[in-house]
Image: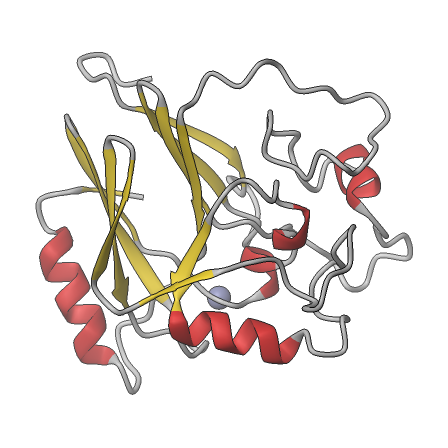
Length: 213
Ligand SMILES: [Zn+2]
């Protein structure tokens, strides 16, 4: 809770882990989340097979109204949805940031750079990259809004600029988030070298006067 601001930032997951970041920024009846993956340990003998397992094993936090309501869950129930506008943003394709997007409530729009959208659809062509959709449609991946580099998306009272950055995943981005009383920069995974070093430097420059997550 920020004392003098109406903007609320909640770190739901990924504080003490590498990856699995789920952060929420809310302002009045608008809110956004960024990244929708899960921490995972490929060496663990017990692997989660579905959303119920992920929640029960504390690998994913229960988030009110954010999961596909057609998935029956034991022991979890959402409260009334007080938000008018909700959206999720994905910084890049790596699984610790993307693995549970098919469990996202179909009524919540999901945004990412076009490059990440195209990679996710390709990597999941055999339905074995992400957790599978509960209601299988024509595609193996839920609906995605691909955005152009530096495009600004308005979610109620929150504005999000999706900016390219360098990372070892094509299509990676950072987010510049503007609420009526705060500007926040979310780096995603970022590196200061590589083929898109210039994009990283540009993102850092625009983030200079922000609070950085
Ligand atoms: Zn990464």
